[in-house]
Length: 283
Ligand SMILES: Nc1nc2c(ncn2[C@@H]2O[C@H](COP(=O)(O)OP(=O)(O)OP(=O)(O)O)[C@@H](O)[C@H]2O)c(=O)[nH]1
Ligand SMILES: [Mg+2]
Image (cartoon, rainbow, N blue to C red; front, side, top):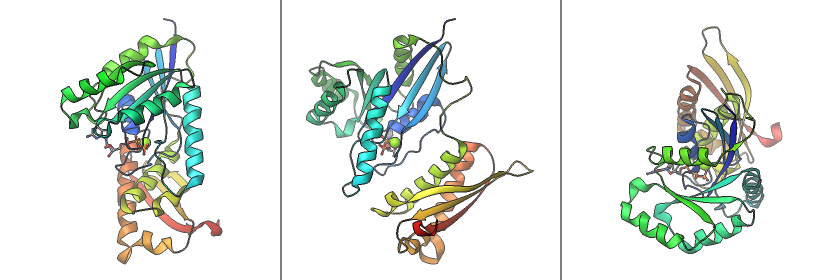
């Protein structure tokens, strides 16, 4: 059978459920998800092979930008546009509870400048009645460059199969880019760092978590197949240290436990995680 290929960019506001969707499409965690805003901060690629078709998904950072961090905002925008230009087809995802015709129209017209096929997906339909989504879709049909509409619940796996079938029907004859057994362009080390970053997002508040970088300095498979992982939590200002450690060390303890649990799930192995907080200037 001739090989086929399609590259798909997942675009949408922060919290729309892009990362939840990519994980559900791939069937494994390739991108972290969180109820906080701006969870994804770089493009993450997930690969799904179905018979002779390879579908490559790009998860991107949400396009609501946190107020004060201009450096990140610029980086996010570049990442989003790179994914749009790289893809054959764009899936624009909207949290149905946040439906706003004008905002959607603005975004779609902007994305339309790239001249790619745009399909629209309402997500989180588990939270509303079906008739709402039909009414909204009728309104959105005014935006003529939208080629197709889907209603999904990424979290509960609803509508996923129809979406995959549609993407397969749009794929083109071409060689595959990735091997059959690859599911992501990211390594186990990257995912382990992301789990800790996500645990920090969950356990800290406001601006601080967004200024933190997690870096690996040891990743070792032990004789009993357990994995020993040591990571640096790099902070920009020494005063964050006591906040991350928390009263009696409780916050860092929770961060470590949350992260270790997530890493174990992803790596399917017992993991011993060690965290060390260091200041940027100490590197
Ligand atoms: N009820 C419900 N919740 C969902 C659904 N999809 C995602 N969520 C939740 O919405 C929140 C945001 O999901 P993410 O996948 O992290 O959103 P994102 O679009 O990747 O966000 P950024 O990375 O910040 O751009 C998480 O708490 C998810 O569990 C869904 O279909 N139904
Ligand atoms: Mg995300």
